[in-house]
View 1 (cartoon, rainbow, N blue to C red):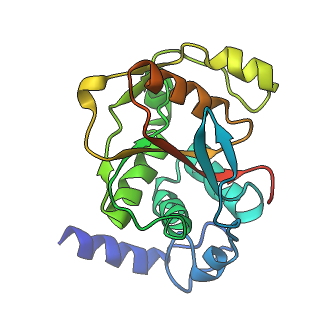
View 2: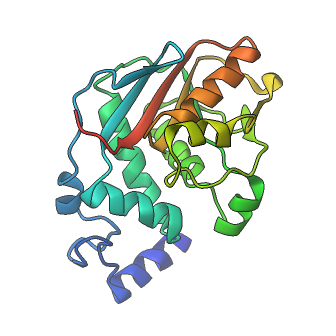
View 3: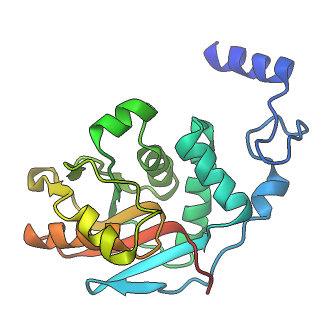
Length: 215
């Protein structure tokens, strides 16, 4: 009954595409706009702390608007489309289903203010698509860091020093796949990998939805 009522309301109010404003498909992201998002080549984008980092697309145009809408403008329904984009890319990397997906955590006060961690929401849908274990509790952010986008590479590293704490008792089966929205200098991945290594956890790979830099 709930799904029927939601569907009826969507039909009455004609949900529009967040990107082109079309109401033809009555969905937050129409197929035309989704298809405009381009993948980067399916290969390692960089190596951080000896671990492979993959980036699915470039942080620009529709992908940029998708992430900003999800992250800053309470457009939680966009999480599925980012998860689908990331999974579509990830399928070209591996068909191994033995992963535990760890979304990059945010500080609890920031999560309370935003009402959700966007990468946790993306992680849930990503795991459903791939049949992976979802493990948001394995590592937590214990330091309220400054926003990274205005900082230099050295400032980012300093800002993130001591920002994470691993909870080894939460470790599940499977390789760790850390997921994030943007990989710029890789400082967040680097700090998380170092913290995992301190706890004897080394089987790690990283996947970012985007990077500011192309191939």
